[in-house]
Image (cartoon, rainbow, N blue to C red; front, top):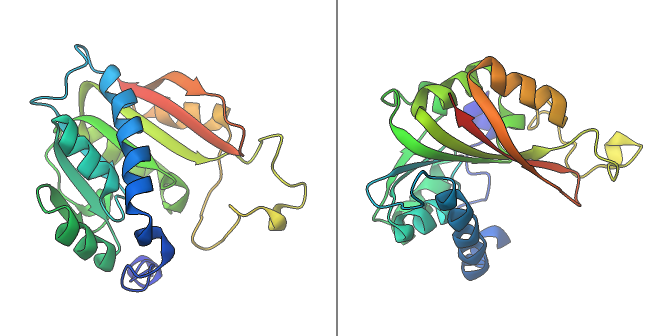
Amino acid sequence: MLKALYDDTYHGASESYFTKVDAKLRRSRGRIKRIRRLLPDGDAQGRTFLDIGCNGGFMVEAAREAGFAATGIEPDAAAVAWAREHFPRSTYINGLLEEAGLDPAQFDAAYCSEVIEHAPDTNRFVAAIARALRPGGVLYLTTPDIDHWRRPRDIEKWDAFCPPSHCLYFNPRNLTQLLAKHGLTVVHRAWAFKPGIKLVARRA
């Protein structure tokens, strides 16, 4: 069912998301700068980076430019093919994180933006993230915030409410508890004007 749900989500990478390459790369480079500052010496050289739900590979390419050995994982085969064609100097895995067979403690930094709400088993998903990170590794994570003050009172009018693609919704408290259960401690949470959570966690 998951493979069918995420099979060619962007219709051969032809939708508008893939026509805004420069803007996507600019935003990705800014986020990579923030992630790089979280590393012990602020240096990406010789470090490893994982984008979970990498889509067209924009964050992966920005990480590679910054000096990371970058890897992206994505269930949509068409998006992975687009990333491999346009940003071929990194590694891409077509599939789900939980089934990817990554080596334990392989990555210094991981990025997971608007993905965790898609996971049907969030404990298995977060356990896979924690297992992939090295001790002290950092996770930059974003997801919709169901308790945000700007979320529409009628949840069906919220643009982030889209079952079955989105399986579960979080607020800052229960997301922090979920991450802690798997050894990931929230060290920073950014204020968000839109109904979303943006946080950084570190593996113990």
